[in-house]
Length: 146
Image 1: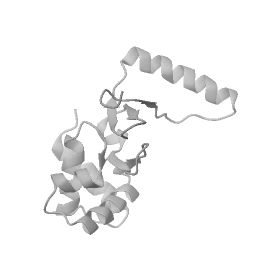
Image 2: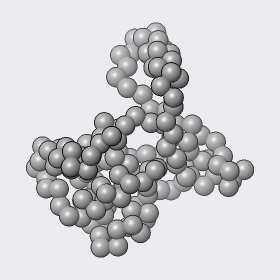
Image 3: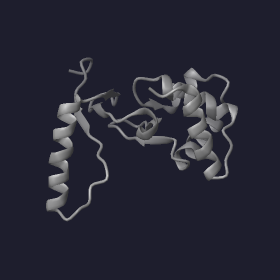
Image 4: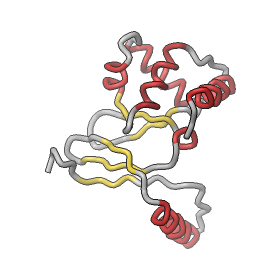
């Protein structure tokens, strides 16, 4: 499990590498994303960080994304969602609702993940592609939209 101190140290190093500081506003955004069990939209981030101005949230998300701290997750609705990158928080996949656009994180059991890695590596190799890692988004309808 990642400790808050080690997470902040890693993020500060990444921010420094792109000549940016790990400011209080950026720290608030990171705290919200680290505590979330799914990727969050900017409105959801703003709701959880009332001290952060909307324009500041957009700018800070862009800087965090550039620094390799945050990644963008696109869904079927109009909102991009954001989460901390996998190498900070752990490998996982997403369930995406084609109706409402909600995105949920899912962790696949290790044995299945291992088989998935082998299968995807074989597919990539057959195409002459060197696989570095994978993301898997399962698209369907959530319980509310069914």
